[in-house]
Image (cartoon, rainbow, N blue to C red; front, top):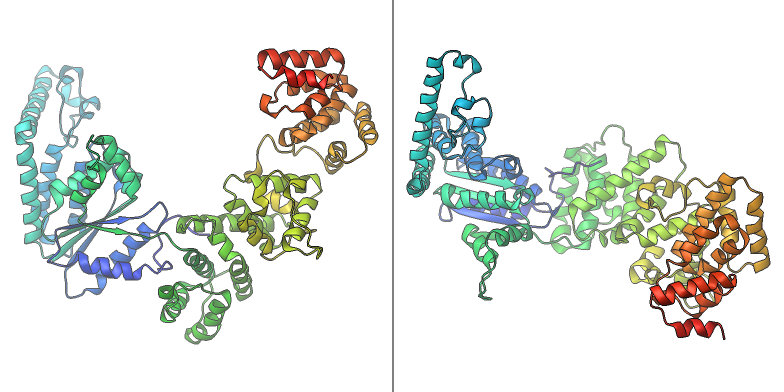
Length: 625
């Protein structure tokens, strides 16, 4: 399993980016500088920040201090500006290497930050009613204990004390002093860095795009107004679309179409934008195979594998790593230096799973939209299901589990996946529809029969190019019992419209026989009539199953007509289903089926659709000719 956070191992080949960004960040000619790492959610921005932090350690000839800040931690603060400033000062205070002699300067700046903070909730936490009207205190002022209000003199003493705090605070934070506060902090911060032994202070800011829009703007403004001074470099990881939305929300677009408010704002804050490109399909497949390797190999062995691949130029050339190539490197090159597998794993398991994901890797990659985090989540789901099967001693094939998960993932609405679930449910785990599609698409029948998807499903996506690739990926699924795999994936197919899972195999077969429109009508009617001999619970479950099939396939209207005629106890429910059809879906075929009802029921339906639903009366009259 993989944690859904930044990796410390460079499996995305981001090291060159980290080298370049670090080189720029410590350049005296470039700072003060703000670098923006722009990338979509899950694109690896946090991993790149980790690599940059690690890369600063190789510059032994320079004194570089790195402070890492998670902007999302400011979400609960009333003022993100002062929260960021305080977090950076606290990070400097904890850095004994470069700021040991700067304690007084850090303390002085922290006091200034405290005075600048607006304490809207301070008085609500323990101040008596006598002074509750005194508002606007900085949040870090310690409130008196209730024991300090025992006498009138002590009460007056505390009121005077708070009044003095308020007067000093208002004096410091008056509108006339806003510019002075900014200038004073910038000068103090710049002096603090100048007097320290540091050559460059690098502040890494992560998860800014997870904050609400107001916090995002406040953080960016704090960097621009207070903190961007000589010897400082800010590196901010963010999703540009989220930042743009936040800016536009606070500063609405001007009428002048030539001005883009968000772009102009970002350009004023960020001097060097670096965009992390979406991973290509080959990159995602490579990343997936390396994640598998990470699960089995100790860190030292994994790093040797990655370095060997880099030496071969795999990443630079954009080539796809083959499972065979990974296994070859592991067995020949790393073994010499002491190959180490993680505890509880074996070489046999490693080789098996590398080959599985080597087989399906390309088609998985095409469905994950170049996103490393999605890749981790796919693999985590795979291994959760694998472990669930092992715990319950379910016999299954890892390759089949992986192939079905590919369908589940690239079918964004899961329509095909749910339809396949329905098919296997109706045929005791072995869907004949899937076998037919597989044979026709792969032309295994040899008769050159063209694919007519309408004979099997109403969804044309089954014959898309992506699905043809899926069908062509090993293993083949014809005649395979898929029920255990869908049992493991039942969270993905949970939907009221799907078949009731309370039905046993015999009841499912019974429903299929009733709903098989190719069966002679006399046999179908006999099956429906036999339901009268069943106990009420079983009969009701079968009726629900038939309704569910009708909701998925309106050609089952013919079956409901028979239920209406043969099972009186369901007449009212079935009649309500007749009234739910959309007018546009009612053709002459449906009206002719309705004519099989008794005359009174037909006329009620006709009146309902013509008068209430405004259907074309001519079509209904035509059926009576």
